Amino acid sequence: MKCRQSRQIKGYETFSINRRTFLKGAASVAGVSLLTTLGCESTSEGDDLTSDSGSGDDSAGGTDSGQADTSVHSGDRSGATLFLPATIGTVELKNRILRSATEEAYCKKGVPTSEYTKVFTDLAAGGAGAIISGIAVSALEDSMPFMLYAYDDEFIERFAEIRQAVRDVDPDCKVFAQVGHTGHRYSGDKRIGPTDKSWPGDFKPMRAMDVEEIAYVVEQVAQTIRRFKDAGWDGVEIHGGHGYLISSFLSPYTNTRTDEYGGSVQARVQIVKDLVDRSRELVGDDYPIFIKFNSDDRGGTEPLDLEGGIDQKIFIETANELAKMKIDAIDVSGNDCSQFGVNDPEEQSYFKDAAIALEVDIPVILTGGNRDADDLTALLDTGEVDFIGISRPLIREPDLANKWLSGQTSGTACISCNQCTDLMNLIGGMRCHAVKS
Ligand SMILES: Cc1cc2nc3c(=O)[nH]c(=O)nc-3n(C[C@H](O)[C@H](O)[C@H](O)COP(=O)(O)O)c2cc1C
Image 1: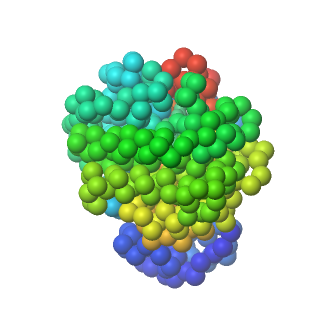
Image 2: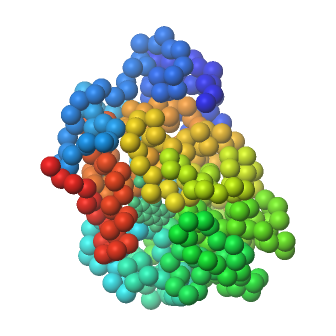
Image 3: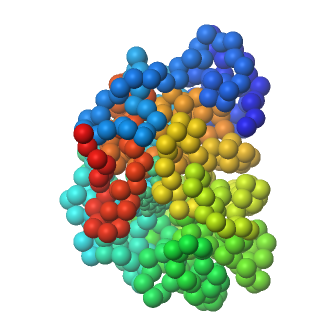
């Protein structure tokens, strides 16, 4: 991990090199150094804001056994970079905390229930800067009944109601929809991909798409983006990760096509280019569109057994190609990422090396294993990462952002046991099932 040149600001040592200048001011005033986190030399008196050990609050009543920490912090963090505003495209977020896309599994036959809306309003009341929905259904044949249906204009009114419910709780909390296509993951007998080569393990087999099918999916997803704009949502995230359809196109492991959609990094991103170009025709250039994708097809703390997929080099090449499009941010993830534990502080933010290595001039969102407010502030202070995506901890503690803001805690009560994912897939309903003491 590299350490960048540092300088003194207001008595604190922080990093001066920030390639995204529009965020530079915010990143420079917070006064928390990454030096401690990176294990580099530091002489600044302001460095040592990393976690104290101690028993933290756990309003969910949970145990933290096996988990990093729920450490207590002595003061509020309103001046910390984590809580300073920044923009994605034309939209300003009040802080850097995004609820990462998380399948809510509270829809009935695709229709959001009151429990679905409550997930959003709880997160808004809990201080999140923005909420990214779980992946919405753009084509009926790509659906599971508990997913949010978005394949028809008849759904726009419901989306508008959800957006308004969040506004009523916190006018500053932004709401993004995640869009895409699951490809082979949940698609019944309609599993599709760039080729018939599937991912290893329990991933399902795929059927290669022809160019007409690619055009069909692109149009479906672009129309979904337009629907969320019509409903007043603040932007969309394209799901390009986790082995889903676009992920399979971006990866040289699954995409061995030799036509205009495969064979080179430029060809592998072509499906995203088609989607962005068509979406821009529908929603204009000012509507935020960003993309989440794998920094490593093998994943993070418990890697999948595969060779020849996206690694850090290909990730950077892919990001550079995507950044040439009218895309407003990159959300850094990895394959099958919600299966990863965070059993040790060293395993936190497990895709941060890839995020730091990026050299793009659009904001970078880092998702996966983010667990400690002070460590995250230090990371943001490098200017190499602009936003933090959080999923599992916000299932357990939807008010985690406010707890971090007030200084009530620096950690989280989430123990990354993954029962939220495992049981959601079995019985529906996104909730924390961790053993409570
Ligand atoms: C219950 C659950 C549902 C998820 N659904 C989605 C999803 O719809 N789209 C997506 O991109 N990621 C999804 N994820 C992955 C998260 O967005 C995130 O990338 C992953 O959980 C790692 O972040 P964390 O360590 O903060 O949980 C889901 C995760 C969980 C736990």
